[in-house]
Image (cartoon, rainbow, N blue to C red):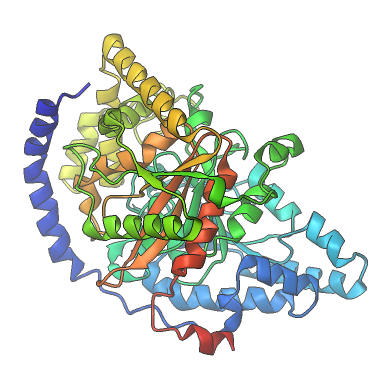
Length: 534
């Protein structure tokens, strides 16, 4: 384990890299300028998925009308955010017309449709790394032409419940970064400020949601990929407890036994009320669905609340004052509204979160990197040194983060069994302490990321900040990213709500309450909400 002295040494050694990328990012930010997101003018785009589906079932609005509204919005905002990899607009319109015709026939009651197809007619956007039949499944890798032959189980479940996939969205190469960039589609921009990152690796989805071009989406999360982007783009993202949503078909994947414990598909939405609906619709196993009790109301006055706002370690950034303000506002609201204390706690072992999650998860074998000689044999690697030489000469077809990841995995594999044992023991202590506090009726309020969305490329010296998120993948706890406020730079600031495994209903209930209290998603431009809704 890294001692305090070693952490200081790492901080000192990485300072030149930080200064370099800080300077480069500020210079390049002037070339990343894009026109601002156009204001929303169609009131359909301001409705939650729950509201839209209810209106479609009751024939107050047509499904085709909804799909057309979202197609128009995608075309309107994508020149700014660059989030789309491939669309299926024509097929989506055909499917919408079929739904409208079936509704005219009146074969089913509204109650039957709500029970069997709760997502009826809703536009769905999906991360490119998740298979959607007939769509690109490259995960941002150049010189590949992977097309999904069929829907993965989760997408098939969403289709069966009435959702209409519209497109697949951008992801970093092999989903290996918290900055959504790859050499094929390019860089995805934050809808609140295109000079800043949308996060990653589900950055395409979050950018679409934040700009009002999607209402529900499916991303993935292994180290915060389904929470950093929602936090940066002002929407909601849920990392569920593992094992409930099938992760079959994802690119990349791993055969390591640890993979299905730390990797999950992540439901994401603009409105908190849609998360339980989307989450439950992804699950095919009724017994598993019953375990989660998502339909049962949660009495928040009987929930135990805790919070932490301290810096994770010396190798991570300090928690920004805006994040502390958001956390403090959430704590104050819960204490006042429910007349309960929100206890501040300190788990000292969490200072090792970055090292634990990074090293333990990177040791999974085999997993996809850019260094495998083929997708069929993941154990045979190309030369890492040669890829670095190609990149330095400007000849590598791959993104820098993909090369860095392969190098870090190589480094993680050099750890001795004794060092890994110490990490596993530290992980057990963290799990024990977290469960000791949370039990089956507690939640932890915690920074999603130590600061709001930063400039493009700055993630290269902020990699360790992912320890704030990846720890909860490592210990298999559900976590929901929630927007709280817009800071004085016009950027969303949020927190995450964490609970014990299987207690997803608690974090989702808290997300709804925080949305009610603080307003949730705020359009990234001067959209007049009352005027549009009227």
